[in-house]
Length: 266
Image (tube, rainbow, N blue to C red; front, side, top):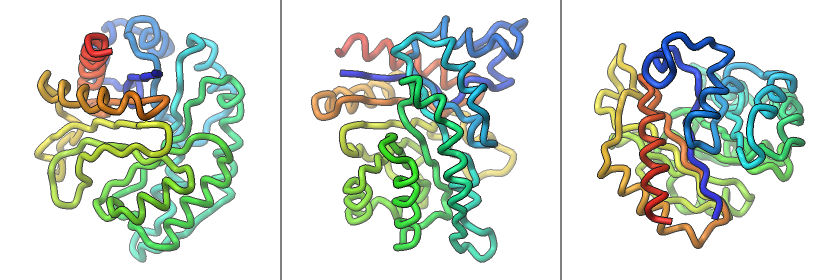
């Protein structure tokens, strides 16, 4: 069984002095993450903000052990910007999707690419054209594992889950605050990979001027996650678990806790 645990991103200013030394240089942060934490994967989120070059990916690749996996977060032009604000119409640009796919060739060739994460926004709703758009993206990606995360409950219907699974599109299991509009925490085994994303349970999620990812899971909450992961161990070939409660380095704290809990259960 291949269990990969890490965080969603590794560079945040408020991690310095909390999970990284005060005097650390920016160019040394990734090496510190690799060499000082018992993590064997990471979600690279720099790729969400811009399409980056193979040279940048190559820099990450060279610094990791062979069993380390990267998940690349898809460029926002493919997910968030595909929906036109105001009209809320789908305006796909497949050239952007193709350019993004071409940009990760270096990572793919390294054998360390675990797949691509597509985090769609709350205003991305299920209908024929949005389903077809996701399937077209899958066609562009070819055999690369594709993981999708939705931020509304409408995608939880069995008919949508079935169609995505049938097209070899992996659905993330996500933990969020318990609000009516947000998805429930529900274990989804999509094909042969399970993918967990833990965002925290901040009750002030919708309040202005609040970091919605400011939440530290307690030991009992993490024990529940550990139990869920353990229960599906024999049903999948690989499990990813990422913490996105990134405020003040809390994602690192919780990822470390999960690593230790899994050591005692496997």
